[in-house]
Image (cartoon, rainbow, N blue to C red; front, top):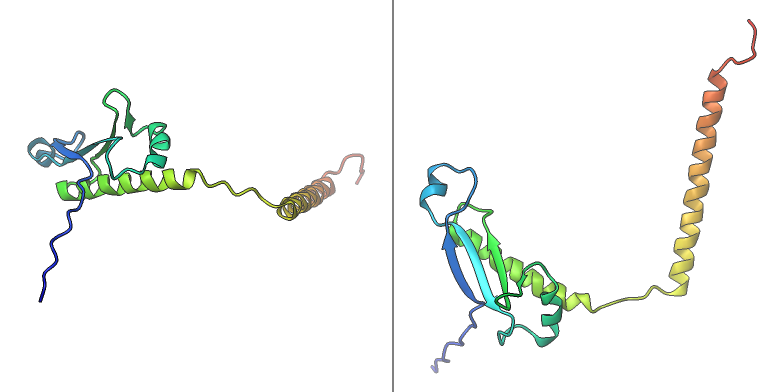
Length: 144
């Protein structure tokens, strides 16, 4: 049986840990649960087409030309690390989908226009009905 050499998984970046802020009592004061992920924008695993989009996001730190993500959501350091990696994945996926623009067809535009007209007509009917109900309650000019 031949064993394949282990594939080397690229590291996403460098993690640092610190104490979280806010309420939490002794756990906050003693345990370094806050996870901070910093990875350079020119890392080989970041697709070149995604870099321009990532540079426009709040996660990009222009001073160090890197992506900076933090997580203090969980009380566990491992869960905060996983949250940072999830945020990083979402950032790259959003960069991938940002360039996709589907222009609606003329048929779809007409359908939306017709739906808007129908909604306006329905709303107008409801308002007229309500107006008639209120008018029926008033006894202006009527003598008993």
